[in-house]
Image (tube, rainbow, N blue to C red; front, side, top):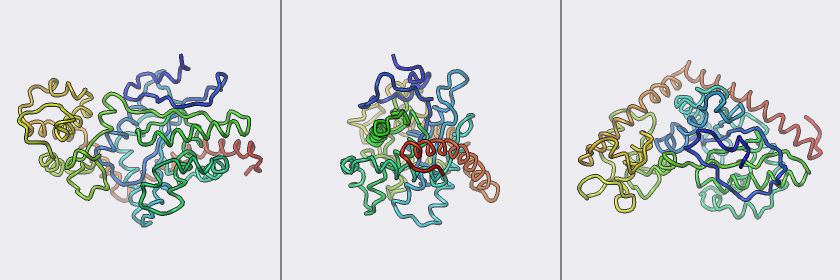
Length: 372
């Protein structure tokens, strides 16, 4: 049976994913720590919220003895990663503010011991990335497909996974909530943690466990475009009607839902293969009501037609998003809103820097570098 902190009490929405491990039976037990990051893309859309942010909030809301994480639980806006796309400076600053404000509005910082910060404000991320690059074979990065799929031709795209590994190991995080598409990067962090521990004959880093969505969270993680259910909901889609933003007005939300693609088959039934557009709407309702998709139509009584389903979904969405939308507007309204966001980010940076400084000091000692 695994150590107690691996049992993850009451975290039924996520499951640890077993990856190949080089740890030995007498490996030290690290304090459980939760860490994840998000790109500064502005106010999240519904897919971001249901597939990631709302479940970060759920993970941090464990009470008393049931809380498995050692404080602080850390979440960062990964603005250094955003530089791979060469954004305009003013645009990056605004998107970072909007992303941070949205996370706060969603309740991420409502639980004690949770901190939010900007990656670029903690220098240890890039220092540890460089130190890890000295023990990472080039072939490891070459085998990762992401850099081939990006349109940007720069070295940062190639070394992106190294910085992601540094993000995790800098805080000796034990658990990282991610989607399936990020599994290979968490596996790289495990491999480099084990490689560092072996190279320097130490127990410096834990082997991080990815936390994959399951249950209702897994349903939420596969939110599809409202205009093309064969694609994920995405900000890169040029059609604004394909996605619902957390700051969308009531009218915008209803307009987008009313025009959402379904099919010409009469009635309402859940069949992701034959009726993907309709299944996407049912998945959304299931995620919002924490109910299995196959049962959601029964729970909400007879849903006679597609328009009735869309109205039911709109009611659930508006109930969930209205308070978030109001709080986002407050946090983006100058001067007090941005000042409050900056204060909370500064508080998070101070907590992150304290953890990072301890890691960097020990890594420098182990590698033979002089102390700072």
